[in-house]
Length: 82
Image 1 (cartoon, rainbow, N blue to C red):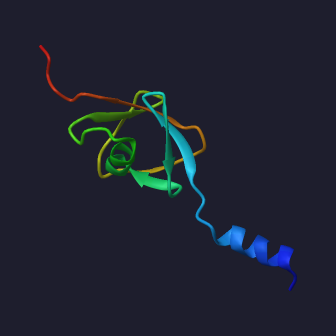
Image 2: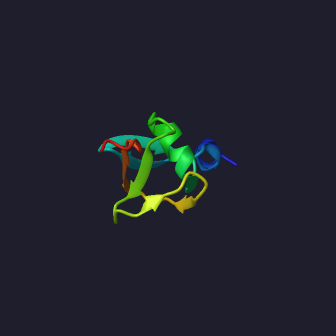
């Protein structure tokens, strides 16, 4: 095995991240699957906030989502402001 083959093998072993956006801010996720809670945590969003996908559907904290590059999510305060 030559040096370039060694580098290719190392590159394949390196963790791949997926860039998504939460409130228009880029977030690098370490895996293709993440729970709503993991997305909020990685984005620095308070746990009490609600998370919504691009279709406006709420993503529950325990729900696992299959992530794709440049997926967009919105996190908003879950507090009742009425």
